[in-house]
Length: 382
Image 1 (cartoon, one colour):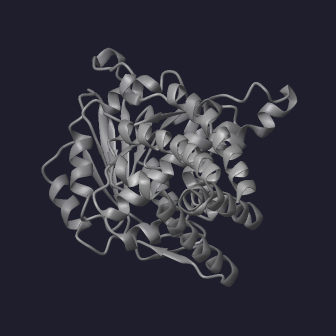
Image 2: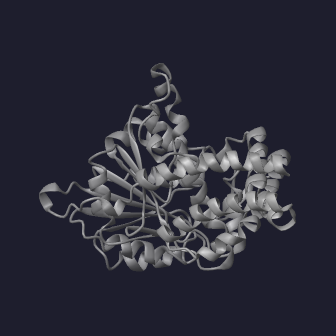
Protein backbone atom coordinates (compact mmCIF):
# COMPACT_ATOMS: atom_id res chain seq x y z
CA UNK A 1 0.00 0.00 0.00
CA UNK A 2 2.91 2.37 0.69
CA UNK A 3 4.00 2.16 -2.95
CA UNK A 4 0.51 3.14 -4.07
CA UNK A 5 0.58 6.08 -1.68
CA UNK A 6 3.89 7.27 -3.15
CA UNK A 7 2.31 7.10 -6.61
CA UNK A 8 -0.63 9.08 -5.28
CA UNK A 9 1.74 11.64 -3.73
CA UNK A 10 3.51 12.17 -7.04
CA UNK A 11 0.22 12.69 -8.86
CA UNK A 12 -1.14 15.03 -6.18
CA UNK A 13 2.12 17.00 -6.26
CA UNK A 14 1.55 17.60 -9.97
CA UNK A 15 -2.06 18.67 -9.36
CA UNK A 16 -0.92 21.15 -6.70
CA UNK A 17 1.45 22.79 -9.19
CA UNK A 18 -1.26 23.08 -11.86
CA UNK A 19 -3.92 24.14 -9.36
CA UNK A 20 -1.82 27.01 -8.00
CA UNK A 21 -1.19 28.26 -11.53
CA UNK A 22 -4.86 28.05 -12.47
CA UNK A 23 -6.01 29.70 -9.26
CA UNK A 24 -4.24 32.87 -10.40
CA UNK A 25 -4.28 32.51 -14.20
CA UNK A 26 -7.80 31.14 -14.80
CA UNK A 27 -9.50 34.52 -14.91
CA UNK A 28 -13.14 35.28 -14.27
CA UNK A 29 -15.20 36.91 -17.00
CA UNK A 30 -16.68 39.16 -14.32
CA UNK A 31 -13.33 40.98 -14.09
CA UNK A 32 -13.66 42.25 -17.65
CA UNK A 33 -14.80 45.81 -18.19
CA UNK A 34 -18.25 46.38 -19.70
CA UNK A 35 -18.99 47.89 -23.12
CA UNK A 36 -22.25 49.76 -22.90
CA UNK A 37 -22.02 52.72 -25.32
CA UNK A 38 -23.41 52.54 -28.86
CA UNK A 39 -20.14 53.75 -30.43
CA UNK A 40 -18.19 50.74 -29.12
CA UNK A 41 -20.91 48.17 -29.51
CA UNK A 42 -20.57 45.86 -32.54
CA UNK A 43 -23.55 43.63 -33.20
CA UNK A 44 -23.54 40.39 -31.22
CA UNK A 45 -25.53 37.34 -32.32
CA UNK A 46 -26.52 35.19 -29.34
CA UNK A 47 -27.19 31.71 -30.70
CA UNK A 48 -29.12 29.08 -28.74
CA UNK A 49 -29.65 25.54 -30.11
CA UNK A 50 -32.65 23.92 -28.43
CA UNK A 51 -34.01 20.38 -28.62
CA UNK A 52 -36.54 19.19 -26.04
CA UNK A 53 -35.65 21.95 -23.58
CA UNK A 54 -39.09 22.81 -22.17
CA UNK A 55 -37.77 22.91 -18.60
CA UNK A 56 -35.09 25.52 -19.25
CA UNK A 57 -35.60 27.35 -22.53
CA UNK A 58 -37.70 30.25 -21.23
CA UNK A 59 -35.20 31.11 -18.50
CA UNK A 60 -32.31 30.91 -20.96
CA UNK A 61 -33.96 33.10 -23.61
CA UNK A 62 -35.30 35.73 -21.24
CA UNK A 63 -31.90 36.11 -19.57
CA UNK A 64 -30.29 36.57 -22.99
CA UNK A 65 -32.83 39.26 -23.84
CA UNK A 66 -32.19 41.22 -20.62
CA UNK A 67 -28.57 42.11 -21.38
CA UNK A 68 -27.28 45.61 -20.65
CA UNK A 69 -25.30 45.48 -23.90
CA UNK A 70 -26.88 47.88 -26.43
CA UNK A 71 -26.54 45.97 -29.71
CA UNK A 72 -27.46 42.30 -29.93
CA UNK A 73 -29.86 39.79 -31.44
CA UNK A 74 -31.03 36.48 -30.01
CA UNK A 75 -31.52 33.52 -32.34
CA UNK A 76 -32.99 30.26 -31.09
CA UNK A 77 -33.10 27.19 -33.29
CA UNK A 78 -35.84 24.73 -32.42
CA UNK A 79 -34.16 21.47 -33.41
CA UNK A 80 -37.28 19.40 -34.14
CA UNK A 81 -38.36 19.28 -30.50
CA UNK A 82 -41.01 16.79 -29.45
CA UNK A 83 -41.93 18.44 -26.13
CA UNK A 84 -43.30 21.93 -25.33
CA UNK A 85 -40.15 23.77 -26.49
CA UNK A 86 -41.81 24.86 -29.74
CA UNK A 87 -44.90 26.14 -27.94
CA UNK A 88 -42.81 28.16 -25.47
CA UNK A 89 -40.68 29.70 -28.23
CA UNK A 90 -43.74 30.59 -30.28
CA UNK A 91 -45.14 32.46 -27.28
CA UNK A 92 -41.89 34.34 -26.64
CA UNK A 93 -41.21 35.26 -30.26
CA UNK A 94 -44.73 36.62 -30.60
CA UNK A 95 -44.12 39.33 -28.01
CA UNK A 96 -40.38 40.12 -28.32
CA UNK A 97 -38.90 41.98 -31.28
CA UNK A 98 -35.22 40.98 -31.36
CA UNK A 99 -35.86 37.29 -30.76
CA UNK A 100 -35.65 35.13 -33.86
CA UNK A 101 -37.25 31.70 -33.57
CA UNK A 102 -35.86 29.42 -36.29
CA UNK A 103 -37.29 26.05 -37.26
CA UNK A 104 -34.60 23.43 -37.59
CA UNK A 105 -34.25 21.41 -40.77
CA UNK A 106 -34.07 17.60 -40.63
CA UNK A 107 -30.60 16.44 -39.60
CA UNK A 108 -28.47 14.99 -42.43
CA UNK A 109 -27.02 11.55 -41.77
CA UNK A 110 -23.45 12.82 -41.80
CA UNK A 111 -24.04 15.42 -39.07
CA UNK A 112 -24.49 15.11 -35.32
CA UNK A 113 -27.33 17.06 -33.75
CA UNK A 114 -25.65 19.95 -31.95
CA UNK A 115 -23.14 20.85 -34.69
CA UNK A 116 -26.00 20.78 -37.20
CA UNK A 117 -28.13 23.09 -35.06
CA UNK A 118 -25.24 25.51 -34.51
CA UNK A 119 -24.43 25.48 -38.24
CA UNK A 120 -28.00 26.45 -39.09
CA UNK A 121 -27.90 29.24 -36.52
CA UNK A 122 -24.66 30.60 -37.96
CA UNK A 123 -26.26 30.91 -41.41
CA UNK A 124 -28.80 33.40 -40.02
CA UNK A 125 -26.47 35.59 -37.95
CA UNK A 126 -25.52 39.17 -38.78
CA UNK A 127 -23.24 39.89 -35.84
CA UNK A 128 -19.55 40.68 -35.77
CA UNK A 129 -19.41 38.31 -32.80
CA UNK A 130 -21.20 35.01 -32.26
CA UNK A 131 -22.04 33.82 -28.76
CA UNK A 132 -23.08 30.16 -28.71
CA UNK A 133 -24.81 29.16 -25.47
CA UNK A 134 -26.63 26.01 -24.42
CA UNK A 135 -30.31 26.10 -23.51
CA UNK A 136 -29.57 25.17 -19.89
CA UNK A 137 -27.49 28.34 -19.45
CA UNK A 138 -28.75 31.65 -18.09
CA UNK A 139 -26.84 34.91 -18.21
CA UNK A 140 -26.40 37.78 -15.81
CA UNK A 141 -27.17 41.18 -17.34
CA UNK A 142 -23.52 42.09 -17.93
CA UNK A 143 -22.45 38.77 -19.50
CA UNK A 144 -22.58 39.82 -23.17
CA UNK A 145 -20.95 43.16 -22.52
CA UNK A 146 -18.06 41.54 -20.67
CA UNK A 147 -17.76 38.82 -23.34
CA UNK A 148 -17.41 41.47 -26.06
CA UNK A 149 -14.72 43.16 -23.99
CA UNK A 150 -12.86 39.85 -23.70
CA UNK A 151 -13.20 39.29 -27.46
CA UNK A 152 -11.24 42.49 -28.06
CA UNK A 153 -8.21 40.60 -26.77
CA UNK A 154 -8.77 37.12 -28.25
CA UNK A 155 -10.25 35.59 -31.40
CA UNK A 156 -12.45 33.33 -29.28
CA UNK A 157 -13.37 32.79 -25.66
CA UNK A 158 -14.98 29.99 -23.73
CA UNK A 159 -16.62 30.35 -20.33
CA UNK A 160 -17.00 27.60 -17.74
CA UNK A 161 -20.29 28.57 -16.06
CA UNK A 162 -21.00 28.63 -12.38
CA UNK A 163 -22.75 25.28 -12.07
CA UNK A 164 -25.89 25.15 -9.98
CA UNK A 165 -26.13 21.77 -8.25
CA UNK A 166 -29.25 20.94 -6.26
CA UNK A 167 -29.71 17.18 -5.93
CA UNK A 168 -27.32 14.86 -4.10
CA UNK A 169 -25.99 13.33 -7.32
CA UNK A 170 -25.37 16.71 -8.93
CA UNK A 171 -23.40 17.81 -5.87
CA UNK A 172 -21.41 14.58 -5.87
CA UNK A 173 -20.52 14.37 -9.57
CA UNK A 174 -20.51 17.76 -11.31
CA UNK A 175 -17.80 19.50 -9.22
CA UNK A 176 -15.35 16.73 -10.13
CA UNK A 177 -15.41 17.94 -13.74
CA UNK A 178 -14.14 21.32 -12.59
CA UNK A 179 -11.62 19.74 -10.23
CA UNK A 180 -10.14 17.85 -13.16
CA UNK A 181 -10.05 21.04 -15.22
CA UNK A 182 -8.27 23.01 -12.50
CA UNK A 183 -5.69 20.33 -11.64
CA UNK A 184 -4.68 18.81 -14.98
CA UNK A 185 -4.43 21.58 -17.60
CA UNK A 186 -2.91 25.04 -17.03
CA UNK A 187 -5.47 27.46 -18.46
CA UNK A 188 -2.64 29.63 -19.80
CA UNK A 189 -1.63 26.83 -22.20
CA UNK A 190 -5.05 27.04 -23.85
CA UNK A 191 -4.39 30.71 -24.57
CA UNK A 192 -0.72 30.46 -25.53
CA UNK A 193 1.67 27.61 -26.25
CA UNK A 194 3.95 26.39 -23.45
CA UNK A 195 7.29 28.18 -23.56
CA UNK A 196 9.11 25.03 -22.49
CA UNK A 197 8.26 23.35 -25.80
CA UNK A 198 10.94 23.63 -28.52
CA UNK A 199 10.05 26.38 -30.98
CA UNK A 200 9.55 24.01 -33.89
CA UNK A 201 7.01 21.97 -31.88
CA UNK A 202 4.92 24.76 -30.37
CA UNK A 203 2.54 25.25 -33.25
CA UNK A 204 2.39 21.53 -34.04
CA UNK A 205 1.55 20.63 -30.43
CA UNK A 206 -0.75 23.61 -29.90
CA UNK A 207 -4.06 21.74 -30.47
CA UNK A 208 -3.13 19.22 -27.76
CA UNK A 209 -3.58 21.98 -25.19
CA UNK A 210 -7.01 23.00 -26.47
CA UNK A 211 -10.03 23.00 -24.18
CA UNK A 212 -13.46 24.56 -24.30
CA UNK A 213 -16.88 24.42 -22.71
CA UNK A 214 -19.69 24.25 -25.27
CA UNK A 215 -22.10 25.82 -22.80
CA UNK A 216 -20.63 29.23 -23.71
CA UNK A 217 -18.34 29.94 -26.65
CA UNK A 218 -17.77 33.39 -28.12
CA UNK A 219 -15.95 33.93 -31.41
CA UNK A 220 -15.58 36.73 -33.92
CA UNK A 221 -17.23 35.97 -37.24
CA UNK A 222 -13.99 36.13 -39.25
CA UNK A 223 -12.34 33.51 -37.05
CA UNK A 224 -15.47 31.35 -37.26
CA UNK A 225 -15.30 31.48 -41.06
CA UNK A 226 -11.55 30.80 -41.05
CA UNK A 227 -11.99 27.47 -39.23
CA UNK A 228 -14.91 26.44 -41.43
CA UNK A 229 -17.51 26.98 -38.71
CA UNK A 230 -19.30 23.92 -37.41
CA UNK A 231 -18.84 22.16 -40.74
CA UNK A 232 -15.33 21.36 -39.53
CA UNK A 233 -16.71 19.48 -36.50
CA UNK A 234 -19.96 18.14 -37.90
CA UNK A 235 -19.34 14.56 -36.72
CA UNK A 236 -17.70 15.35 -33.39
CA UNK A 237 -19.44 14.47 -30.13
CA UNK A 238 -17.18 16.83 -28.13
CA UNK A 239 -17.52 19.53 -30.76
CA UNK A 240 -16.54 22.26 -28.31
CA UNK A 241 -13.02 20.87 -27.79
CA UNK A 242 -12.66 20.16 -31.51
CA UNK A 243 -13.63 23.77 -32.27
CA UNK A 244 -10.91 24.91 -29.88
CA UNK A 245 -8.42 22.66 -31.66
CA UNK A 246 -9.46 24.06 -35.03
CA UNK A 247 -8.99 27.59 -33.71
CA UNK A 248 -5.48 26.82 -32.51
CA UNK A 249 -4.54 25.00 -35.73
CA UNK A 250 -5.29 28.22 -37.61
CA UNK A 251 -2.92 30.13 -35.34
CA UNK A 252 -5.84 31.95 -33.73
CA UNK A 253 -6.27 32.52 -30.00
CA UNK A 254 -8.83 31.23 -27.52
CA UNK A 255 -9.04 32.23 -23.85
CA UNK A 256 -10.82 30.45 -21.00
CA UNK A 257 -12.74 32.19 -18.23
CA UNK A 258 -14.90 31.10 -15.35
CA UNK A 259 -18.46 32.37 -15.30
CA UNK A 260 -18.89 33.26 -11.63
CA UNK A 261 -21.05 36.37 -11.60
CA UNK A 262 -21.81 36.28 -15.34
CA UNK A 263 -22.75 32.84 -16.72
CA UNK A 264 -24.75 30.16 -14.90
CA UNK A 265 -25.79 26.63 -15.79
CA UNK A 266 -27.56 23.61 -14.41
CA UNK A 267 -26.32 20.78 -16.58
CA UNK A 268 -28.54 17.95 -15.34
CA UNK A 269 -31.48 17.51 -13.00
CA UNK A 270 -31.46 13.80 -12.10
CA UNK A 271 -29.10 10.88 -11.74
CA UNK A 272 -30.25 9.30 -15.00
CA UNK A 273 -29.64 12.57 -16.87
CA UNK A 274 -26.16 12.86 -15.40
CA UNK A 275 -25.24 9.29 -16.29
CA UNK A 276 -26.58 9.42 -19.85
CA UNK A 277 -25.26 12.93 -20.43
CA UNK A 278 -21.71 12.02 -19.43
CA UNK A 279 -21.91 8.58 -20.99
CA UNK A 280 -22.08 10.10 -24.46
CA UNK A 281 -18.80 12.03 -24.18
CA UNK A 282 -16.72 10.66 -21.28
CA UNK A 283 -14.74 8.10 -23.29
CA UNK A 284 -14.72 10.32 -26.39
CA UNK A 285 -13.02 13.01 -24.32
CA UNK A 286 -10.01 10.67 -24.09
CA UNK A 287 -9.89 10.39 -27.88
CA UNK A 288 -11.30 6.84 -27.61
CA UNK A 289 -7.82 5.79 -26.47
CA UNK A 290 -8.42 2.61 -24.43
CA UNK A 291 -4.94 2.36 -22.81
CA UNK A 292 -5.04 6.02 -21.74
CA UNK A 293 -8.60 5.61 -20.46
CA UNK A 294 -7.65 2.57 -18.39
CA UNK A 295 -4.50 4.24 -17.10
CA UNK A 296 -6.39 7.30 -15.90
CA UNK A 297 -9.08 5.10 -14.32
CA UNK A 298 -6.38 3.26 -12.38
CA UNK A 299 -4.68 6.50 -11.35
CA UNK A 300 -7.92 8.02 -10.10
CA UNK A 301 -8.53 4.95 -7.92
CA UNK A 302 -4.99 5.01 -6.55
CA UNK A 303 -4.96 8.74 -5.88
CA UNK A 304 -8.45 9.33 -4.51
CA UNK A 305 -9.60 6.00 -3.04
CA UNK A 306 -6.47 4.26 -1.74
CA UNK A 307 -5.54 7.08 0.70
CA UNK A 308 -8.98 6.84 2.33
CA UNK A 309 -8.57 3.07 2.68
CA UNK A 310 -5.08 3.57 4.11
CA UNK A 311 -6.43 6.10 6.60
CA UNK A 312 -8.95 3.54 7.83
CA UNK A 313 -6.92 0.33 7.76
CA UNK A 314 -3.21 1.22 7.54
CA UNK A 315 -0.43 1.27 10.11
CA UNK A 316 0.04 4.50 12.12
CA UNK A 317 2.75 5.94 9.83
CA UNK A 318 0.75 4.96 6.78
CA UNK A 319 -2.29 6.67 8.19
CA UNK A 320 -0.34 9.89 8.73
CA UNK A 321 0.95 9.83 5.15
CA UNK A 322 -2.55 9.14 3.80
CA UNK A 323 -4.00 11.89 5.98
CA UNK A 324 -1.56 14.45 4.52
CA UNK A 325 -2.52 13.45 0.95
CA UNK A 326 -6.23 13.66 1.75
CA UNK A 327 -5.70 17.03 3.41
CA UNK A 328 -3.95 18.46 0.35
CA UNK A 329 -6.71 17.21 -1.92
CA UNK A 330 -9.44 18.57 0.36
CA UNK A 331 -7.84 22.02 0.45
CA UNK A 332 -8.00 22.09 -3.35
CA UNK A 333 -11.61 20.94 -3.39
CA UNK A 334 -12.67 23.39 -0.69
CA UNK A 335 -11.08 26.29 -2.53
CA UNK A 336 -13.10 25.36 -5.61
CA UNK A 337 -16.20 24.91 -3.47
CA UNK A 338 -15.67 28.44 -2.19
CA UNK A 339 -15.15 29.88 -5.66
CA UNK A 340 -18.19 28.23 -7.20
CA UNK A 341 -20.52 28.19 -4.20
CA UNK A 342 -20.69 24.41 -3.65
CA UNK A 343 -21.17 22.51 -0.39
CA UNK A 344 -17.67 21.65 0.96
CA UNK A 345 -18.95 18.68 2.97
CA UNK A 346 -19.64 16.75 -0.24
CA UNK A 347 -15.89 16.75 -0.96
CA UNK A 348 -15.47 14.27 1.91
CA UNK A 349 -17.31 11.73 -0.26
CA UNK A 350 -14.58 11.76 -2.91
CA UNK A 351 -14.12 7.95 -2.93
CA UNK A 352 -17.82 7.55 -3.79
CA UNK A 353 -17.43 10.13 -6.57
CA UNK A 354 -14.50 8.23 -8.05
CA UNK A 355 -16.27 4.87 -7.83
CA UNK A 356 -19.25 6.41 -9.66
CA UNK A 357 -16.96 7.56 -12.47
CA UNK A 358 -15.35 4.09 -12.56
CA UNK A 359 -18.79 2.56 -13.15
CA UNK A 360 -19.45 5.14 -15.86
CA UNK A 361 -16.11 4.27 -17.45
CA UNK A 362 -16.95 0.56 -17.50
CA UNK A 363 -20.23 1.34 -19.26
CA UNK A 364 -18.44 3.55 -21.79
CA UNK A 365 -15.91 0.80 -22.54
CA UNK A 366 -18.73 -1.69 -22.94
CA UNK A 367 -20.44 0.64 -25.40
CA UNK A 368 -17.17 0.99 -27.31
CA UNK A 369 -16.46 -2.72 -27.49
CA UNK A 370 -20.02 -3.70 -28.44
CA UNK A 371 -20.66 -0.78 -30.78
CA UNK A 372 -23.64 0.37 -28.72
CA UNK A 373 -24.44 4.06 -29.05
CA UNK A 374 -25.54 6.37 -26.28
CA UNK A 375 -28.79 8.28 -26.67
CA UNK A 376 -29.43 11.93 -25.88
CA UNK A 377 -32.50 14.09 -26.47
CA UNK A 378 -34.12 11.25 -28.42
CA UNK A 379 -31.19 10.72 -30.80
CA UNK A 380 -28.37 8.21 -30.94
CA UNK A 381 -24.95 9.76 -30.38
CA UNK A 382 -21.71 8.12 -31.44
